[in-house]
Image (cartoon, rainbow, N blue to C red; front, side):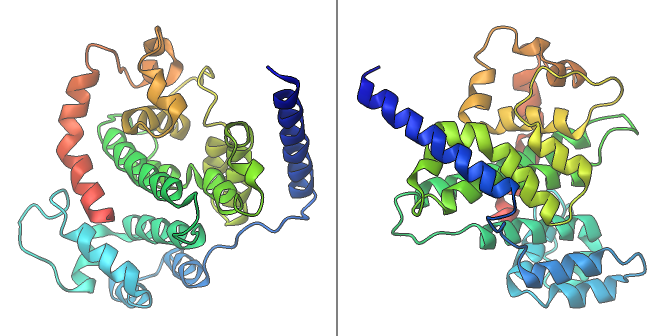
Length: 288
């Protein structure tokens, strides 16, 4: 490494350290959850919310109406093949948690956006796509678990939808601070920043901690599979980051705790992908 390259890396490290210190002191404002979706999620927390009221809540956001109808008409959730055109019927079919996940997906897309002219725009689009792809795999894999103590498929999907908001945030600031687009910034800071954002948005501590520790592959937890286990596996299945797409090519990946817990091996990996292929494609189509 030349002296000039070494000096550049030192400057980048110093900048990132300074950025992190400002963030920890609350001197950098974290992005707020979009107001319209925040109101919707607040209403969804009401245990007495009826399906009729839920339909009214959904109609407050036109984009959410479209997403909910697409999901209700997906091959996965519409086995009858009869098209649903009524929002009230759609939300009855999906339920509160799936509607919540649809709202979160749209909120993240609205929150983390940059002009098309930005040199980082294509990367941003790819990250949004990776979040949805990971969420589809998380939903599919969690649905195949026969363990009452395992996370629900809806919570697995929610965690996956939120897992890369830290990287999305860094990218939205990269035109102002180019250092934030550097690989070491993404690898080193995005999980912690993502956890801070998700906590700021009011999501559970379990989801927050899962996002913060998403790159810790060696940790083993006794008992049922966790959200962390499902996220690691789903990221690999979705090829959702350079690190995770390389896991499958690494000797001994089957011995990593998440894969051992979910009983995924090189022998059954392809059959697992084939088993859930239609379900994943159906969800991706609904989220498009």
